[in-house]
Amino acid sequence: MAELGLNEHHQNEVINYMRFARSKRGLRLKTVDSCFQDLKESRLVEETFTVDEVSEVLSGLQAVVYSEVESELINTAHTNVLLLRQLFSQAEKWYLKLQTDISELENRELLEQVAEFEKAEFTSSNKKPIIDTMKPKLVPLNDGGTTELLNKEISRLQEENEKLKSRLKTIEIQATQALDEKSKLERALQDLQLDQGNTKDFIKAQDLNDLENTVAALKSEFQKTLNDKTESQKSLEENLATAKHDLLRVQEQLSMAEKELEKKFQQTAAFRNMKEILTRKNDQIKDLRRRLAKYEPED
Image (cartoon, rainbow, N blue to C red; front, side):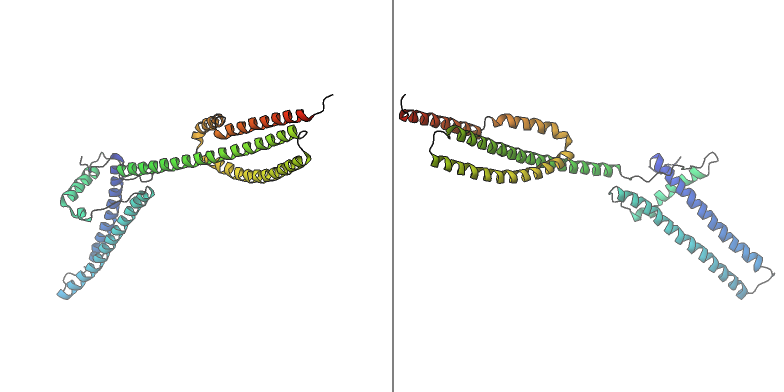
């Protein structure tokens, strides 16, 4: 059996189209036959005709046959356009661009191959009609194009994934920094309050008043800073939740990174500086106590 170089599914589609074209062609040929038969029955009733009468009969027959053939050719062209439209529409859904070679439509060798294929398919008495009950949608004609499209989509998704990872990492760092700064401010306030309680009985009233004013100012500034940081933290947390929704796969890694950051904080310069400040404060308090002890009256 002649082959067209197509897979089984596409070859069956070609056979279905050939069956449709043969059916239409057969109807048109019957129409042409009926034109001649009508002429015989309606005009050829006399035994002799003049040249003018024969010319008139042939002209009328020519007009009828011309109309039928022209109508069939136009309908065939439009039918082929609809078939191409189906193929192109399906290809566009896969972002493919199909190309046609019009010159191949007049390739005698290929036309003879198609004629041989049609003859082999439709002249055998053992051939059964192919009934396409499923009517599947057209698929892309170029598997290489599909693979290239999928590779591009995968590359695009990978690039977007990397961008989201970078964005999530940045938000995590910002959130961690905000939490650290908030914690440092809270500890600083607690240390100042503790220092105030330890030194309140040993300093003069004016110094105590100044210290209280300083603490009040620090409280006000801290509250303002804390409110700003809270709003900033809420915004960061919302962005963080959105990013985490898109990158659930990296949550475990980010959680480990956050824990590691919390451990490393104890080793930061800010923590050591605060510890040194507390040590100096304690030394100052001890020195004040020694000085006051010199001026206390002995019993």
